[in-house]
Image 1 (cartoon, rainbow, N blue to C red):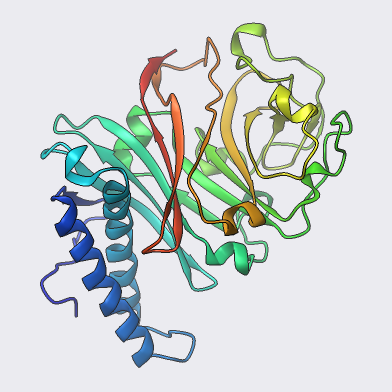
Image 2 (tube, one colour; image 1 turned 90 degrees about the vertical axis):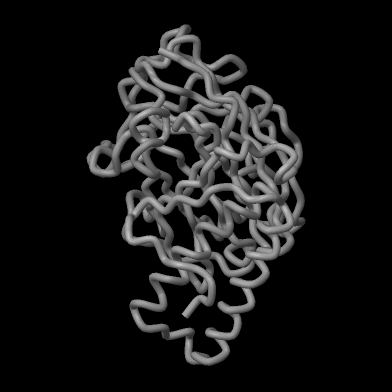
Length: 313
């Protein structure tokens, strides 16, 4: 099926890093194979289950390879580093994937998510995940066991949603956009989160610097949202921002959420987002200090990369 490549049998696929040229040559080769196979199956790309599984596994591995090439490839990659692939889902013909990069000692140094730009051109309908998420994807076990990240949920908002009434621009969040929730808690613990008004403030040591107290309103199967202080005075429409999410009782920051408009994604460029970092998280784990979003021209996708992991409690 894929000449010169083998589909790993395990769920978490490992690939040792190669020099940049080999990564890009591999990417082009597999991309060509995928295009040929799609052309041979033109009716909504109705692949057999085996072919579909192979496509998901290979595209997941290659998207991570593309990130390495974009960030300097062999120049920045240690020869012992590996890419570990998490889960993938195909929505509206676009494959969304989770993955991580680990060093030779098995330590997670990047946690990633890849989203094709075509999702911004054709926003998905609500799915069966919590709060209508159209994609719910777990991270590899090493990520779940050693870092803040458990899984990601993605909601599409083609008509936007309500904006904090205290914002200067009360229509800021009305732009079509994606809510990309990176959760610390397992998905089974997200579904029961109740709606309602909860006025307990987050303690000063658990509120990230630069963030306002979360809204009192808890979104069902999600929680309360804390915005950057800069969002309150922003005048233009939403482009990209980072939300800090809290449980209704304000006891724990259980997700961090890039909120990115479709128009901004369609500009197809790189950007960075702040990482909300409290003095006290409430658990001992590895937590990122940087979030970079890289546009990959070859895949026409954005790679969300959390890195700079440090110990936090």
